[in-house]
Image (cartoon, rainbow, N blue to C red; front, side):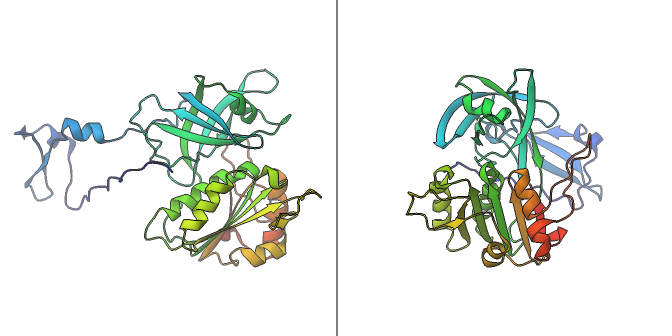
Length: 322
């Protein structure tokens, strides 16, 4: 679905002490020369203009907001929009490390100014020239979400980042359980896609995706396509709070996520091999894993494990709260 290109591996530095003064010491015939640890001269070809042009830049800054232009804003579900934001330089990439997030600025609902909120892109980290957000509007409640869902094409939106929340790497865990509520899908989807795209990864991933009712479920076609091509490594269980009386076709889970659901579908509480990741509204955190802590002027803390997961024996090393 999303474009990608190979990443450049870091150059090994064994026995190559690159002294700054050496850079300017000797240069000739299209090479830069460095002095090695044993006094020998090591040469490295200068990057050609074509190589430099092929090396992507990083579109965003962690220290200040960058204005990105909205090139598309389309509906992908009930009160859910996919917003495409173009980078100022069409050859740049996001360069995010999974699992990560951005800060996106938008107007407050009451018109009193702007506020920034965290969002996880659904486009891949190496997508060239743009990023894509899937945003669920909560009418009468949201600030930035409501702003983004209504933002016209051509508008500039301020974005800052990227910030890594937890490093997700191939085969870091044997099994990952994901519990997502509503717009909490996006970081869970990022984790799943990152690992499924690694040819050597063998992690088993299970997602419980919770919504209010069947009509509220979004991106199911995309999720189901990931399941189909995962060769059994990725499973999804859709869960809704309630099923309308006229809906006789529902064959997913119904009700809030329970201890029985966790035991039946998600990895066992083994912090050395498995992890459960949760993202959703505050009541979901409280019921399932305990709330995060928000010390004033500091980044959020994971807090103690509580709720259903604590009762089932999950410890802090086996639970992550987005």
